[in-house]
Length: 385
Image (cartoon, rainbow, N blue to C red):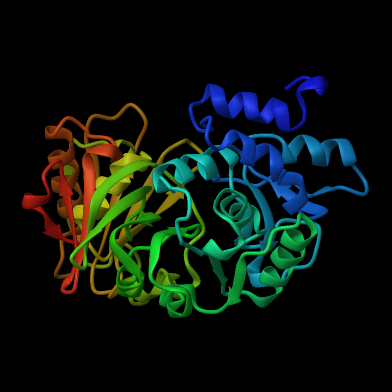
């Protein structure tokens, strides 16, 4: 972006061209500038949200800071739940200003109408709550944030901008019954289970928009329509959000699987013609995760460009490896435990491939009192997830 394009109008033009910023949100975009909600110290990311760069300080590099703020990228604002205070990257990003394209795409999915009453899960810097408040009015937006320090910062940002939604410190997975019922619920953190409380606190005919991902990998925005206590709808687009704190997972160490034995640790050897690399795309991971519950993966790279794909069951009872060698047509597999994890992953991949490798938009999710189910094209042909 050229120097003269750095600023709100340059970002607006980029978002309009991408189809994310629609005409009904443009006045609000201009009235609620992102820079009013970004702290002086940020770690800019890249467009897909998978990596963060080095610290940019407003005091030391005001031009670089402004360029980052008005770029269509996510900005990490907290590491390790606030424990990390240094200039270098922390271990895990835990709060951010989301990529503007995603912010406005999700607001479009939310489809708010004048006078709508909205609950936001995850206040973050407060920008999203500010946008909603400007559009809907001060009394129509409730935003709940788990981290008290983050909530205080968001409250200061909102007051400075003259906006006064109700910002609550609390457990977002419980929603906020004090402001219910809501016409719309929007989450700015990802999850693997849609909390039942959100559905209970949403009016019949209302909408929930949230990032949803599988244990295996892959994530997308789901738009759920509420009818008679059932939430159901399609996924709308790929996403990569930080996990809701109440649904974070701790991965068991390698040692929990091999039981102090050297690989292959008695595992059963076989071969496959499915290249492990083919299973690694974001969409492929999502599709596999929908069909293979309770499984996650790690990759062990080697200097020659090959790597081992490790598969693990969350109960530590089963594991598998698949060795990827560039240019090979057959790949060695080792499996151990009651579940044959590579076989499950390969079956799921073949199912997805046979269906034409559908993108996120063909998948859907249904949430009832009895649990969650996913579907491809037709809600009547759903399976539990």
